[in-house]
Amino acid sequence: MNGAFKFIIGWTAVFLFRLIPFRPPNFEPMLATVMPFSKRYGLAGSFLFGFLGIVLYDAVTSGWGSWTWVTAVCYGLLGVGAHYFFKNRAASVKNFLVFGVPATVAYDAVTMLIGPVFNNQSLAAALLGQIPFTLMHVLGTIVFATLLSPALYRWVIQNESLEFSLSSLKRA
Image (cartoon, rainbow, N blue to C red; front, top):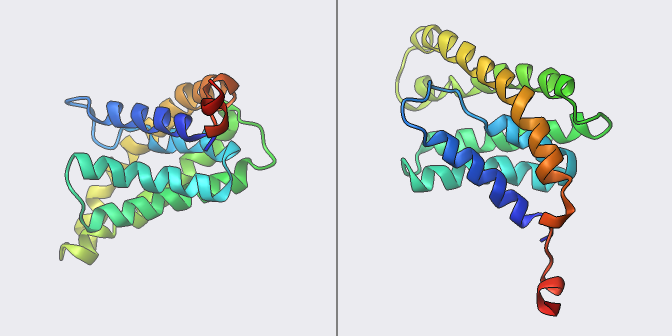
């Protein structure tokens, strides 16, 4: 319960950025937001942050489809991976990049299969189209892991004034 408000802040930041019109495709801050949360909120919190971030966004924007569940599970698993990676490492720009760049490539390799598996797209077409998409995604990861991840960790994750519990609200 103590982190619920922080989760709302993180999801809102990702949601609002993803709503920016004419934003380059796949230039989004989800992984860069998952990483700082994974340092603090354990396996379940890390998985749920990524998973629910996608499910809630799709519920409001495009509706749910096969892409929702594949990307939600993938982001949830990236949260789990980030939890293990950051468990004994500092929440630094270097570590956000060391985890974020390969995680982005792995995520794109898995989600690239949505077209061939669910939409009868050829694997060759999916792979060819994925190359520029992944390059843009990696560029976004680099930018957001450098700027957003450390800021979120410092100003949101470590900020105890943003933590509430039901018992503290009852006393107020």
